[in-house]
Image (tube, rainbow, N blue to C red; front, side, top):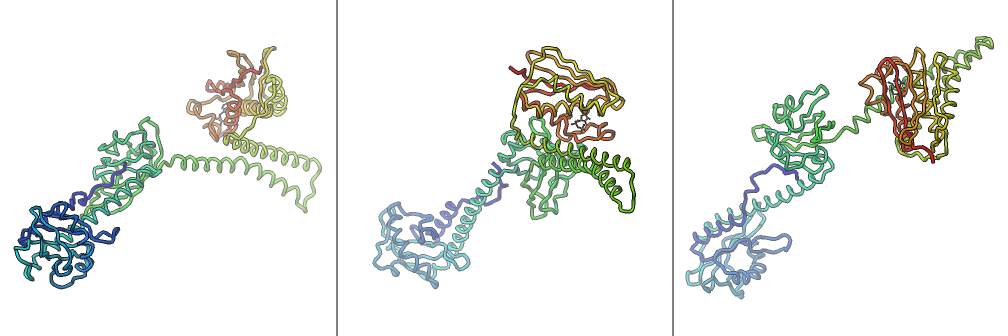
Length: 512
Ligand code: ADP
């Protein structure tokens, strides 16, 4: 639960304060008992707020008196009022000892001209009636009682509001914690528990700066340098925001935005703050994605488009006469670049289909050796410096797959093998049976994969360091391969010896 930092209103005990004032009033006026009646908005009448010297039964009998006498008393502006005079027929309550009480002096408790209660002091009949001299004495107590009552009401309102706010914060979908001026955690909501992996009990009283180590991309602890509570930067600001990375209980890094709403002391020092913690990793991921897609589209689409545009403009110039060979060559380039464009678009569409999990497989028995042969025949026409070798055992089992998608996997892997072996060399496509499963490996003798790239190869839009600077691509080929293989219940793997080539394998259940 997020606790709103306490204020002094919690220390107000309205009943005992009223009780004390009433007792003092009764004693000062030589009374024997007294009652403070409080106006109830809900019941639209006065109800007993505190009583002194009256038994339960006396209070019961006072209730109708309060109901009826109240409007007259509350309206009484001048002097003091005697209940027995206002309501001559009313039977008045008795004290513990059974003494009949009359006369009664009563005054309204007023706050800004509004009657919020009444104070009654009662004397035994034998003690004589009250006089005008008694009024200022009771008025002083009435004033104190009115203030006490008003404070109690405000306190109740604040407590109610506090509970309401605490409940809103508790059930907020965003992480919220409250901290004191030393950044010690005072409150921690459920969303915060989910986000950080820490339970409320674990973190209470700990310093959020050391617990979460909010850091920037250079691993600098931002809490140490610009926390609005510690560094003094919060002295003027009422709210403050910083973004960075926090470490969860499971040692996971999460990108977050901390928004501090700071409460200041009258001297302007930050005393505590409610910190709203928002997980922005998804937003950051989307931003990264957007940048990657834009730069990829910029490169992969703009280049062929510019070439197509250039050739089209040139060939269609009305002032030029082109010989048939030049026209033929221009049309061929336009065709090739158009093909390249459509390949990029197909990859994008397929990747988005696969990411959404919206692929419905239409499986049929496929012999991967034949499919690999088909892909090699097609690609060998454009890869003259490579030697393709197909190595499949004769009795290689078929697999139950969607042929078009599996052809896409083999095409992506073999095209990569060609692309990342710019000096040529052998490209082998081999099949083996491992533990009753079919394993196909595409191996090349190209540039290999650096250690830093290995863990990310199959991520969407990931492009290796060398690839980015030297080779064209979308970073979607391997992502697509993995998604297709996994959709068929298989696994995808990569291995490499730097500068000596790479191997990409996929394993699929053998068809029955
Ligand atoms: P790209 O369009 O960049 O080729 P892929 O998803 O097909 O995208 O491959 C992702 C990255 O994996 C490439 O950028 C490259 O760094 C690396 N890679 C893929 N195949 C090979 C290979 N045969 N040899 C070396 N690196 C490869």
